[in-house]
Amino acid sequence: MQEKNTETKQFQDMTIEVTDNPYHLNLEDIMEVGKRVNNNKRNFLFISKLLGKHIEVKPDICKCTGRLLTSLKYPMKTESLIQYISNQNIDISKELNKAIPINQKTLVIGFAETATGLGMSVAASIKNATYVTTTREEIPNIKKVFTFEEEHSHATTHKMYFDDFYKFDQIILVDDEITTGNSMLNLIKALVKFTNIKNFTILSILDWRNNDQKSEFHRIKRKLKIDIATYALISGQIHSETNETFLIDKETELKETTSATYNFTELERKYGYWKDSGKFGVEQSSIEILEKVCEKIAEKIDCILAVNGYKESDKILILGHGENIYIPSRVAAHLSFDTYFKTTTRSPIYTDGKTIKTTDYFYDKGVKYYFYNKEEIEKKYQKVIMIAEGNCNIKLCNNMMLVRI
Image (cartoon, rainbow, N blue to C red; front, side, top):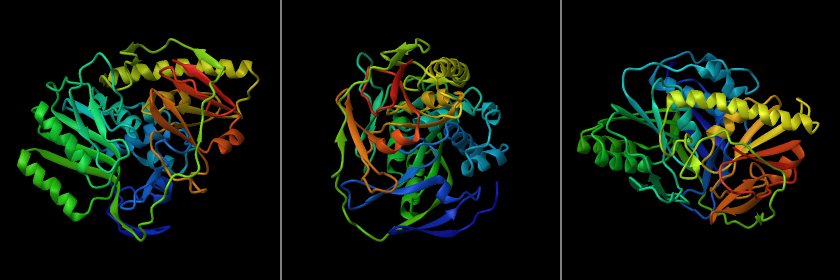
């Protein structure tokens, strides 16, 4: 790992002081700044270029980022991973299939909605780890182990349906951004009540906690008699220069359903959800098997596209939905076309005409989801393929087809 460095970046109406950047990453390669809706205390948000959540990325970037996060705790070769952050057109697929053997029995927990794919990417990098994600979903016929609150969020309650904690020595918590750290502490407090685990690690792409917030971590560590180690790719302080409130004023509801639908039966289900998506716990060995399944699904999609006259040079967008990031991204990674990836989201973002050019929304199971930059996507991609878990079949754009797996 390289030495620490300090730099100051100006983004629109804010100044970012980067105090720790161990891999000397370029902040512009990591994120763009968007505007948060109806919040004058924190009226901005960071739109990640590494997750495929709100803007399109090459599909290997999520797994690459998870592996790079893992390297902060467990040293490994990182040169190609760092290079991929700034140039997503190089091939690092072989590098992504290696897992690090460690002695501790490790549970990795990813935060819904944004970090579900990131957390699973970390678990895929650690031999014999087990992965579970928090979820916003209310799953019938199964008991919630516990819930906890995410502060300063548009959708607060996280649920946990996994209860097999007894066999682990440590827990690694994964999120894309630590703002105050309160949500992490809320989860840790909930976990301490249900487990005897004393060793916690937090991995995050960004860490913006101030000194008081970091002191609160030390206070909780002493109070609960636990250890909390925190690692981030970029740490620093944010100084916002405006408290303007942005209100949603340009959004269109999508109601039309798509007729172009293909049904595969490749993934085992549990309570109506993908069994190995992370909601119920999935072992790293099963994630390796899942990679082969995603490759098989990609081969079937390749055949469908080829039969319909698409060329390998055509731009294809694979679209995940909500919390389902990892599996659709891995299907996308194995397609033979010029493939990109993103997902729908529950996150409301102000239509600023720059990063977020247009805002469309739809409802699934009574929940409002957003699909950003529809018109741009229709022009840029020859085909948009939504990888679906459930029954949602909303036509998000004119060149879309639906694949249920």
